[in-house]
Image 1 (cartoon, rainbow, N blue to C red):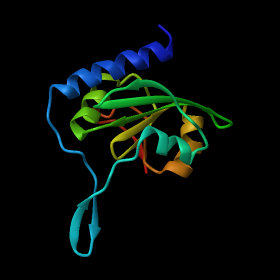
Image 2 (image 1 turned 60 degrees about the vertical axis):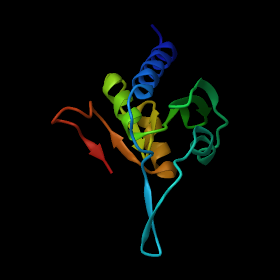
Image 3 (image 1 turned 45 degrees about the horizontal axis):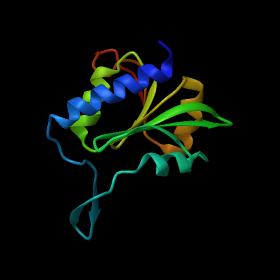
Length: 139
Protein backbone atom coordinates (compact mmCIF):
# COMPACT_ATOMS: atom_id res chain seq x y z
CA UNK A 1 0.00 0.00 0.00
CA UNK A 2 1.41 3.41 -0.92
CA UNK A 3 1.72 6.29 1.52
CA UNK A 4 -1.32 8.29 0.34
CA UNK A 5 -3.82 5.40 0.71
CA UNK A 6 -2.30 4.54 4.11
CA UNK A 7 -2.65 8.10 5.36
CA UNK A 8 -6.21 8.28 4.06
CA UNK A 9 -7.10 5.01 5.78
CA UNK A 10 -5.56 6.15 9.07
CA UNK A 11 -7.30 9.53 8.81
CA UNK A 12 -10.66 7.84 8.24
CA UNK A 13 -10.07 5.48 11.16
CA UNK A 14 -9.22 8.40 13.42
CA UNK A 15 -12.32 10.28 12.27
CA UNK A 16 -14.46 7.30 13.23
CA UNK A 17 -12.78 7.00 16.63
CA UNK A 18 -13.00 10.72 17.28
CA UNK A 19 -16.64 10.81 16.23
CA UNK A 20 -17.45 8.25 18.91
CA UNK A 21 -15.67 10.11 21.70
CA UNK A 22 -15.92 13.51 23.33
CA UNK A 23 -13.25 16.13 23.84
CA UNK A 24 -12.67 19.84 23.91
CA UNK A 25 -11.28 21.97 21.13
CA UNK A 26 -7.95 22.72 22.71
CA UNK A 27 -5.90 25.90 22.86
CA UNK A 28 -6.34 28.85 25.18
CA UNK A 29 -4.92 32.33 25.02
CA UNK A 30 -4.54 34.73 27.96
CA UNK A 31 -6.49 37.93 27.32
CA UNK A 32 -6.76 40.70 29.93
CA UNK A 33 -6.32 38.20 32.74
CA UNK A 34 -8.91 35.78 31.34
CA UNK A 35 -8.56 32.62 29.29
CA UNK A 36 -10.12 32.78 25.85
CA UNK A 37 -10.41 29.85 23.50
CA UNK A 38 -8.02 30.24 20.55
CA UNK A 39 -9.43 29.04 17.27
CA UNK A 40 -7.30 26.18 15.93
CA UNK A 41 -5.69 26.68 12.55
CA UNK A 42 -7.27 25.07 9.49
CA UNK A 43 -5.48 22.90 6.92
CA UNK A 44 -5.66 25.86 4.54
CA UNK A 45 -4.17 28.32 7.07
CA UNK A 46 -1.28 26.01 7.98
CA UNK A 47 -0.61 25.27 4.31
CA UNK A 48 -0.70 28.97 3.38
CA UNK A 49 2.05 29.66 5.93
CA UNK A 50 4.39 27.54 3.80
CA UNK A 51 3.14 28.66 0.39
CA UNK A 52 0.79 25.83 -0.51
CA UNK A 53 -2.81 25.40 -1.53
CA UNK A 54 -3.65 21.93 -0.18
CA UNK A 55 -5.29 19.17 -2.19
CA UNK A 56 -7.86 17.86 0.28
CA UNK A 57 -7.72 14.14 1.00
CA UNK A 58 -10.14 13.95 3.97
CA UNK A 59 -12.71 16.64 4.71
CA UNK A 60 -14.81 15.54 7.69
CA UNK A 61 -16.13 17.33 10.77
CA UNK A 62 -13.61 15.73 13.14
CA UNK A 63 -10.53 15.50 10.92
CA UNK A 64 -9.25 17.17 7.76
CA UNK A 65 -6.17 16.22 5.74
CA UNK A 66 -4.62 18.03 2.81
CA UNK A 67 -1.65 17.13 0.62
CA UNK A 68 0.91 19.81 -0.28
CA UNK A 69 3.81 19.96 -2.69
CA UNK A 70 6.20 22.92 -2.37
CA UNK A 71 9.85 23.55 -3.23
CA UNK A 72 10.59 22.25 0.30
CA UNK A 73 8.99 18.89 -0.54
CA UNK A 74 5.75 16.93 -0.18
CA UNK A 75 3.78 16.66 3.06
CA UNK A 76 0.36 16.04 4.60
CA UNK A 77 -1.32 18.55 6.90
CA UNK A 78 -3.97 17.14 9.24
CA UNK A 79 -6.17 19.13 11.60
CA UNK A 80 -8.47 17.84 14.33
CA UNK A 81 -11.68 19.14 15.89
CA UNK A 82 -10.65 17.93 19.35
CA UNK A 83 -7.63 16.83 21.36
CA UNK A 84 -9.32 13.43 21.74
CA UNK A 85 -9.42 13.07 17.97
CA UNK A 86 -5.79 14.11 17.63
CA UNK A 87 -4.77 11.61 20.33
CA UNK A 88 -6.75 8.83 18.61
CA UNK A 89 -5.09 9.63 15.28
CA UNK A 90 -1.61 9.64 16.82
CA UNK A 91 -2.34 6.32 18.53
CA UNK A 92 -3.51 4.81 15.23
CA UNK A 93 -0.58 6.09 13.15
CA UNK A 94 2.64 5.49 15.09
CA UNK A 95 4.44 4.10 12.05
CA UNK A 96 4.39 7.49 10.32
CA UNK A 97 7.47 9.10 11.78
CA UNK A 98 8.69 11.72 12.02
CA UNK A 99 5.89 14.26 12.30
CA UNK A 100 5.55 17.88 13.29
CA UNK A 101 2.89 18.43 15.95
CA UNK A 102 1.08 21.59 17.00
CA UNK A 103 -2.20 22.54 18.66
CA UNK A 104 -4.79 20.26 17.02
CA UNK A 105 -2.65 19.69 13.92
CA UNK A 106 0.14 17.51 12.63
CA UNK A 107 2.29 17.51 9.50
CA UNK A 108 3.74 14.30 8.09
CA UNK A 109 6.75 14.11 5.81
CA UNK A 110 10.43 13.27 5.78
CA UNK A 111 12.70 14.68 8.47
CA UNK A 112 14.37 16.96 5.94
CA UNK A 113 11.06 18.53 4.88
CA UNK A 114 9.79 18.81 8.46
CA UNK A 115 12.97 20.63 9.55
CA UNK A 116 12.30 23.24 6.85
CA UNK A 117 8.60 23.53 7.69
CA UNK A 118 9.21 23.79 11.44
CA UNK A 119 10.96 27.12 10.91
CA UNK A 120 7.69 28.62 9.61
CA UNK A 121 5.07 26.57 11.44
CA UNK A 122 6.58 26.03 14.86
CA UNK A 123 5.35 22.95 16.71
CA UNK A 124 7.29 20.02 18.10
CA UNK A 125 9.13 17.53 15.94
CA UNK A 126 8.29 13.97 17.04
CA UNK A 127 10.96 11.57 15.88
CA UNK A 128 9.59 8.28 17.21
CA UNK A 129 6.30 6.80 18.39
CA UNK A 130 4.92 9.27 20.95
CA UNK A 131 3.78 6.45 23.26
CA UNK A 132 7.25 5.05 23.93
CA UNK A 133 9.65 6.16 26.63
CA UNK A 134 12.31 6.64 23.95
CA UNK A 135 10.31 9.36 22.19
CA UNK A 136 12.49 12.26 21.20
CA UNK A 137 10.79 15.65 20.81
CA UNK A 138 12.74 18.45 19.24
CA UNK A 139 11.24 21.78 20.40
